[in-house]
Length: 285
Image (cartoon, rainbow, N blue to C red):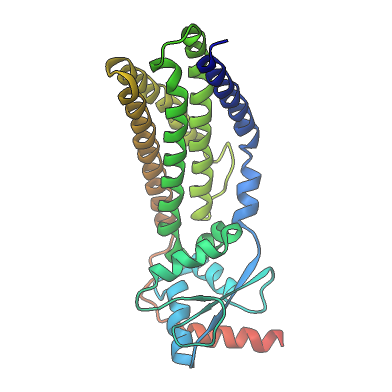
């Protein structure tokens, strides 16, 4: 057997196995479990003013209703689950340092330090959501681009089995690319606190499945029009941009639904976050 054919055969079999494995792993219950993983956030600062300012980066004054209740519930040492520590600059060592005046670098470090809790953290604290949503979308887009490049090789490198390999290519890479996008749909919905499930996300899932045929047809045309490695790069680019477009659309839809479900009462006076936390701590003592 020609060595190229052998390598392509291994790649093809691997793609098929990954496709079916991904289909079996598309269980919304796993996403729900990650999004609801128990934890509590411990805040450390030099004084109460610093603690209040840091607490408000996680539970801003404009939060109200269920989002505010959920955030405050996780900002209590009396809550269950893993203890995750954050501290303001200059506070005692330990935990993730977050500057309340410029919190995004600290938020990013917090998510990286606790990968198993990142969905739960962003679900509990809305200021983390856009940051994690961008990371999830770009990660899935990059993964789909890499897969598209691998599965395009039999179409641009002539071998005796190129035609046979190409016949199975549509089913394998399309299932896997689409499965990755559906998994992303579940994760983005969980970030906003929406119900996660096949029936709950039936509309966006249907749009993803229908759109996959259009993106796939465009990719095949590009591979056929441009020669050699340029065609592989073009297909990978379509997979990346297509997944990016799908992810951004899904996130805008989830974020918009989350905003419209909130009552318009953000101008009401709010009690100090620290005073609420101290009251809870006294009750649990």
